[in-house]
Image 1 (tube, chains in turn green, red, yellow, blue):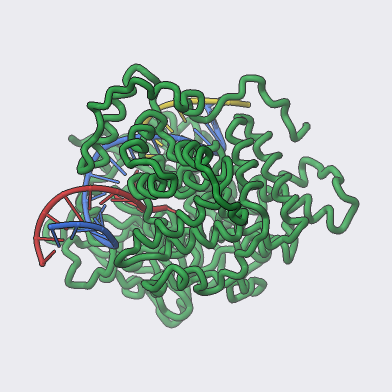
Image 2: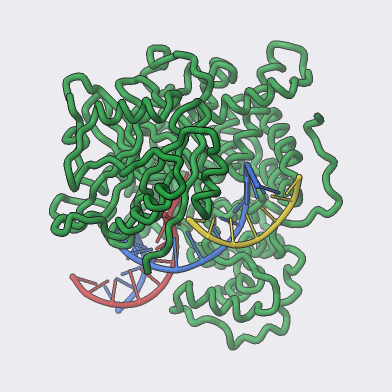
Length: 571
DNA sequence: GGTGTCTGCCCC
DNA sequence: ATTCTGC
DNA sequence: GCAGAATGGGCAGACACC
């Protein structure tokens, strides 16, 4: 099978915005100009009113949801942690998110702050933007993958150091999920203000165009390109842009918005052509070129594999399909267990992509990607899917995912579904209270659901209640909504990877290692049956116990299938 | 200090 | 989380 | 039907401004 597809003739932009640029805004009535004080929600409504009859424009909040992978079981190699480097590679991965020092100082401080050196790259930013531009016009994923991996190979030939900052630009992130303090803290308003000041347009002009076009990137590009440039700015490089983005994220405190704007202005002034478009979109966290994490990961595996091949063998040798696929699987598995591009990429470069499963494995202190469940409508649908297999069902609790880590040094961390460090949010939880034998338990990783708990009534409260809890700087006194952890899995125990074991075995570990404390730490209610009536009853029961339905999981076997069944609304 | 606005790799 | 899209 | 990408509602926090 060929790896490249003929690109379809019917290419069309990912958004319906481009063709309309600057065309339909003539004769726009101005009475709809929002007053500066209007909330963004109102602005959105205005916008929708004005474009009524046309197809929907990209509205606000095009947030990129973090991608979840299955923790697919790689063929068990019997390798345990003895072969794993005990410390993270020298990449300087910040691993103590709680104490990330707050940079209140000058912009320059942030720029020169800790270990930015390994993000250096002299690749012109314009080259990245050219690739983005190409991808935006393509819908075939295979074609996109080809373009991406070709580009990755090209920059690696210059220096493999280029790969990390470039990858981060492609996935539009500033670091791993679990590294705190990497939010840009920018929204459409601040960006519009910055564009307006940099490009010499009035705020109302920009807003009007935004209402019409719905893409600040296009607006910035349009405005930049008609601006006379007195002197030629130095071209932007990948390393520079990436470091600046991180600096923007790390800027906080008083006048932080001014400082952020200053950093953006500096870059925007140096932008030429399409650079402005993608720079602004990156800052909005809305790259919207039809390329996201999964595709980048596949492209990376292809690039790293070919790069590897090129080095030790004749260049441009065609890699067999099965080799390519196994490389993809390896890199996917590694990334599920260690969701950190720096670690995975460096490990590939150092040990080769085929040895990832020996060096990139889960470890307490790094949140692994959760396994995903397929939503199903009814019980019999599940029975079809699991026919012949032994499966088990658990309540699906209406709370927040909590991946609880106990580290060798005795510290504990709690990560959200998206790998965010939520430890601060639960000061009252101490996992050691729920461990049977503290002498023999050095470290572990548990999978739980944190649920708001009514201590007086001894029952579960809805998610809305949980979400009213404080998030930052939470002291014990602040805790008004109690939480009960419902554990349903254990993924690692004393450096032993359990993800390749069957759920049945993992449950045995779980109950052996931990202990129930009613109202604080309990096991997810479960049943193992394939009887339709029993299951239906169990589903109804779960809803009566304020749960959302059931999670249905394969009990044995290496190939984990998981489904969820939604219960009836209780309203 | 309080209030209003904006933002979030937010959570579901 | 749900919905939309291309394959 | 699948995988990947795009989008939504609601709440606490951060910052700007008075």
